[in-house]
Length: 245
Figure 1 (cartoon, rainbow, N blue to C red):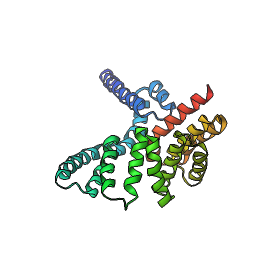
Figure 2 (tube, rainbow, N blue to C red; figure 1 turned 90 degrees about the horizontal axis):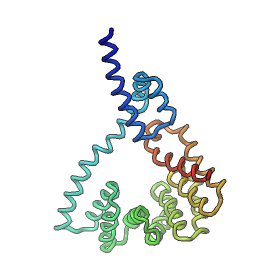
Figure 3 (cartoon, rainbow, N blue to C red; figure 1 turned 180 degrees about the vertical axis):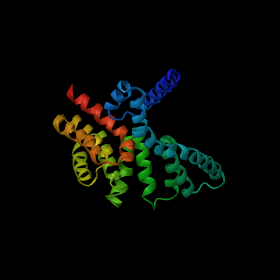
Figure 4 (cartoon, one colour; figure 1 turned 120 degrees about the vertical axis):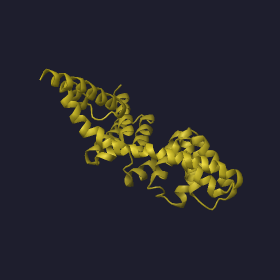
């Protein structure tokens, strides 16, 4: 019995350590830390079953990173012999997925210099410009996409254009477009950017309400989506904390 308790105790600490590390990295609901700490290895097991194992599905994206980077290297070589617009567009999209926004923008610059009959390169370049903080450059690219199709990329183009307007001092345009976007989209990104815009306009109560909407959506989200949206939940919590100051 003593050796069994020793065995469980050793593994118990290991399970708690795994659970705590995962909690710190993924930041699920706060009550889980109390479950892990106060229920010992039993609480850690419950947490692992409820949060860690379902999160394993998200690891697919990490594994996909390797073939993506292999494809990036292939295209980088192919472009030396065939610098076509299509190759640059595919490479730009891969760079976007990889978080290399400066290189993505460069690829779309090259693609657009060869042809302008497609909206998508302009839109994707606009996304890269937003991520790089170059909102003045993003505005005409995103305007081109929204003009061609107001619902482009499941309404994300409209939400990003509203954000770019807000960041370039075009408050009236931002307000109008945010209102349109939030009527048809439930994107946490759009809600958060609208809340930040409202905060910048001194409309604190409205900003708080939109930040809270992001958190309220968790109740009806499937588990896999809640895990994907955690970055926006954290941003919403942070914004609400700032608005209380």
